[in-house]
Length: 454
Ligand SMILES: Cc1ncc(COP(=O)(O)O)c(C=O)c1O
Image 1 (spheres, helix red, strand yellow):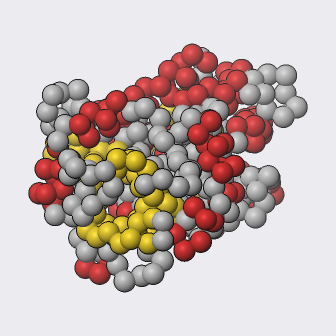
Image 2: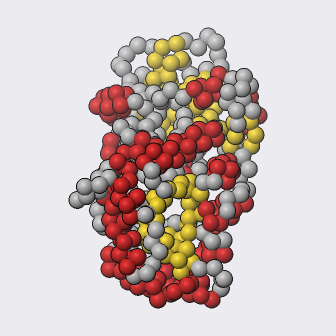
């Protein structure tokens, strides 16, 4: 098919995913499950974790990585954290139970999230988890619970409302933090006040370095009051790159509403930054090298000089290239100049649509017919539901061969937030199972089902 050119967003090379796609396993699993499924590549998780630890070691900074569980529910990540001594960031009783049940010790958990219920606080206390306290009333509940119910002190961080994001609903402002420190002092042995935390929206490095520098200052002030204050948590927000810089900038400059089904348009500001100059462990390196505002020292030097450890809670960055999502095409309609495909799942398995945006990396087409014509076959991808707006991809993706019913579409790099944060059994459709692929380097990859409890 000839005609206009269509914007593309090719993913970065990923030999592990390519090996799975070439193995024939995907077709077999799609047949076996009879619906969409996700596959997970835990070796990539290990690689990402190792790279972050190396960045800390290179900078000589004492640090600890907690996997932000909200980014993907699978048990395999927790199993990997347990095996490698990493921590887990949980925000509900269910997440805490999963983390403990799959082998992570209570001391290696950090409990985040706003206004935590007493059931969650009590469990966290009993298991010696670190608790990021978000508000003064929560601190009061925690202190009371620690004084009455448990033999262990409450290990806590005080969460700071970022001055650069004053409308955030998370964290405490300066006056509240001062009050909170006073209450920690008065609580005596019931509390072990270990430091401060924040989570910033967005992915910029410098604002993180600035706020981390501010938290180090707060630690020094807290120590004067007799509190331990020996660590800060910078939350998550290490960006990842799905594509290269050229492809990303070309995509942004070329795309317009004519490239989407039904003339749909998205604000480019709402797209995830699919390329970042500093990504994953590289973003952590850049952060450690950055000079917090008004300092002659890098963040790494500041942390070392003040004896403050750096905690972090990456979700997406630990899951980079650690999974993909497979759908089968179950219908093809010809529209004016493009095709409208319907797949056997929903956009609930590709969360970006639910944030007024679109998951842009090009899916791979696994064509099942040897005679399907090659070329550029633009196609938009709809879901198997009755909702007009349930589109996995509004964009007309130029597929390399003519798509046909029975072909498979593999959305790459979906483990971080795309797969399961919004999934529901809408229409009584089964939730897509998760397949763990343990050894991608074998001629025939080995697989098993993930062991998530619920
Ligand atoms: C407190 C906290 N920590 C960690 C994260 C994980 O962020 P990311 O997946 O961008 O690393 C989040 C995300 O919202 C968060 O709110």
